[in-house]
Length: 99
Length: 170
Image (cartoon, rainbow over all chains, first blue to last red):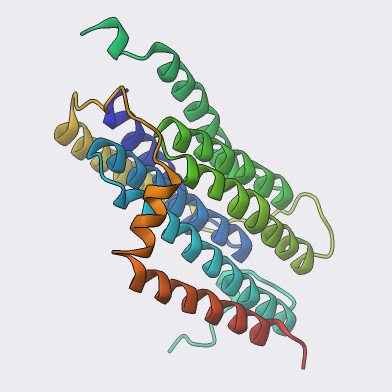
């Protein structure tokens, strides 16, 4: 197997995730797109871990999974808070902090 | 190139799983139904776990299944259910100017693909790789990466407490 096939798969998934973050208005969908991005990074880390015969990439991938779980927990709590205050989670309506 | 170093079966498996993952990922970012998008995300996560096994990372693959498919997806489905009274199609899931994301993503993909193909053309993964043993992984986590591991456990604690504080009703 080539190294590039995994790296290109990661690049494609990363770009799809970036498109999702830009295009989506629903906050939960934006969080899902961020999960796509984090998964593509994990594929890259594990590919390089195998390529360099070094176990550190596996450790980083596990750390990323844990950080992603924490991020989803806090992110969804924030989304719930916004929904409770405004009855909507459309991100383009959150403009109180605009100067 | 020796026939045994091409690894036909692994390459076919990679191709099928990668195609399914890309289709499901596009479904995640374009689907008009939030629950269907979440279920497509499950397919992407499962495909990623399969790719991890192809990359000889068994423990990370199992952790991916447990944490992402088991826990994170349940969180997402709870988030979807709690923030939307009705399920089904919703017209305004996208921003008004969502089309700007298409050229951004395509340009980014082009630049990254050019850099990767230019930098790693023809580099092969070792074909006789042994799966990463869980013992070696834990030796690595608990000796050289012990301090980051502690920091990570405090981060998880803070995230749990913060999520409860944010989401509870006063």
